[in-house]
Length: 481
Image 1 (cartoon, one colour):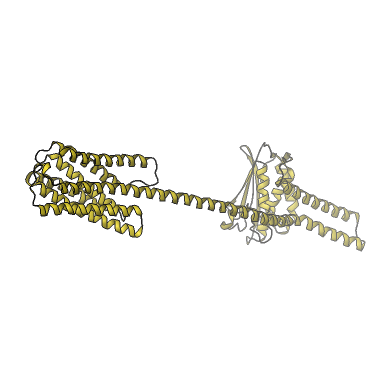
Image 2 (cartoon, rainbow, N blue to C red):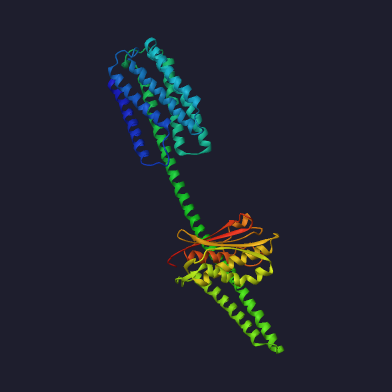
């Protein structure tokens, strides 16, 4: 009898231990859903308690006065029941720290209470005590499972509820047998067969509840995997939509930029072509009136040639933007080029009473394309002149500084006008950005493009005395791209 009963306990202990090891190795191989710590604790303590009981039954003589190992085994059963109830609660809400402390203390108290009962009470009293405690925890976990099923239906939770209900049924059955049987059991052989049957059935249902919990977590892993795959598919669809949208925006932006760039180029060419048109009209008028003398004719044709060359230079600069050809360069004197630009802008500078402040070192030789660097200087100087024309400053100053620095030449063009609003400073060098009421914002963008192609840099800083300052650096010797 003892060997058969011990065998039942050992078989259930082996089953639960195998379940525990299988779960441990399975969950270690993936990280989507981790097993609940309360469930693992319950399964581990229950399998250990079964093994202790199996070993204790073989050696026991007087079941009314068992050895201390039965106190250990029953305490582990208590911890297993507490842990399983906490697992069910954790399905609905977090287990509070106070609950953990109270139940931890209760496990210690149970150890002392059961040890007292082991020494002073009968087998029937201890068994009834365990059945009442087990029934309390079964009711607790059944209520928690029912609550969880309302918010998250699961077939595995149904099985767990059935197994827990069956555990409760067999615990009540054991208690009933003890109460109505008026038994006095001192030997294992005296235990009624019906009581053994209900005890083993309760332990089998307990094992089935652990299996149901394992199946529930496998169900959660499958759901998590399905959800993850679904989210990955949705992300792929969103990424494809994003790529399509970006491509559409790039296409639209390219179309808009092309049209705006065409308008900007037209505006940039408008100055020399407009001047040529005026000179041609003036020439036609003098010819029709017969008042054209050789000196005036020479002056008009020289002006027309100069405007034509300016327009051709702008076209060459713009064309170079879209080509991979190397910039045609030569050694140029930046100081001499500054003087040429000031001569071009001198009529307007004089007419607007703008004071020129020069600080230019001689022999500032750089390897560059003369026409393109002249275009940069002309744009910067014209921008300064336009800023000063609209400025409220009584004394208007255009300041140009050029000097040698380590590795190259530093050029600054500044004015003491009203300056550039802070909100516009970050986009000064963007295509189609302009701080002027007229124009399309090609000038500074073109300046940056030219300077960058020459291996230099250009930046804006507010002028110390008010107004704007543009700082250009060009290297001494570069390989132009």
